[in-house]
Image 1: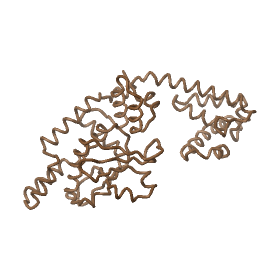
Image 2: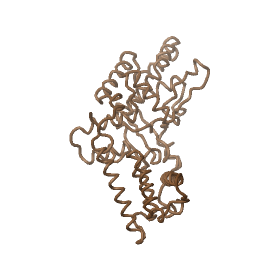
Image 3: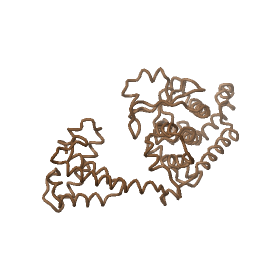
Image 4: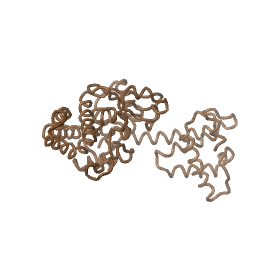
Length: 366
């Protein structure tokens, strides 16, 4: 396979590895019943072997078939869509097979019927927003966790009882507020995947002094001001790599919620602004140092972030809604009625999928 891939140096390493894996899968399948050492044009011109490869591909799930066909096309035409004249007929056969398979996949996806698994977990977007509103009332009004918390703490810093009461309020509600903030991040801003799991809080000055590689592989919350903030998605920090870093403005309402959470964190762990300026926003749900004597672990990986979010939704709404399903729920809600192409493109840019992918995979109905 290496001799074919070397003629496409522009391919990303992950794409090359995927081609190599698919090539080996098909080769091993042929080796089970045939004395075949490699797959090349001569093998593909042999109807017996060609039919066996198609038999193997057709046994795969529908979304997986086209990538395998693409690997075969790479063997026939190492330079994309430019096969040698002697291989033109063979290339056209596999090209036709690719389009037939792709059309079959698209026609199935176009129906966009919810799967049984999705139906079981599904919540309408309006219900999720209502849940967010109820959480806000509970935390802000009932428990009095709001932007005044920091001022109250500073005002009562010498009053031991008041200070203890505030610390208990924060300790008892810290992780509940964190989950509320996670929900807000995915509802006040078009829902992304798990890019917030290790998002670093920092200043513009700190961000500008990073090397290019660091700015490309991480997500940053620029937190210079309380009323305005920005999020920088590194171009290589997302599932679908971007041409350049994406910078978005944080809605004002969300800025207030973030401020309260950072105030809680700074009070609880006695962070100064400088101390809390270059650490991840979110924490692993563990015991507090005041109770266990251990340091609190901050920052999550994507898996843990997703797991925490699903558990949070399940505890409160009885539905195991993860960030992936939340994206589908939002898009199905948002795309009711016609939207301008500009609107579609902007939302797809932030959500990190193409407009075609939105049309094909994210618009569900019963």
